[in-house]
Image (cartoon, rainbow, N blue to C red; front, side):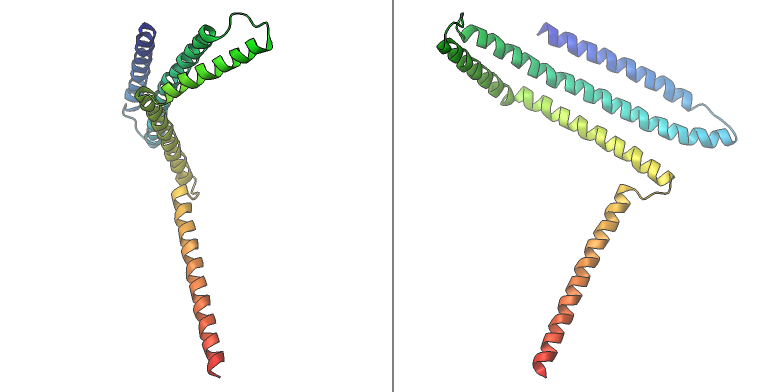
Length: 190
């Protein structure tokens, strides 16, 4: 329990320090400028904010990963301890090895089943997945902004084009069926 509190305190301290650094540099970027430097600083500020957001998302991801791996590590340690308690003291015969194998399988199965069905694991794993998706979303936003600046199609534009292509294929297929049906009717009529 004390180790968990120390880990949380260290994570909070690290988060505060990173936030202070981000706030310091963000305030420096907001200083007034003139001329072409202003135009550059305006874009630079936007990119800096994007990377600050990415940094915060990655720190959140690391914190959630630490919690996740902490739970898995504690479960592994518990399973090893249970294996040592249940296994035979000496491994002299083939039966001793078989008993050790059974004890290990049972200890690991029980420990990890308890872990994976716990509400704590569900919460930690949910936060981890959420932070992974958040990092992905932020990176996608940065990529889209850069593609727009380079006058390249963005993912959303490519998605729209693909939807239009699928719709055109469907329309052409329907038109072809309609023409084939009319030709069949004309052949039957003559």
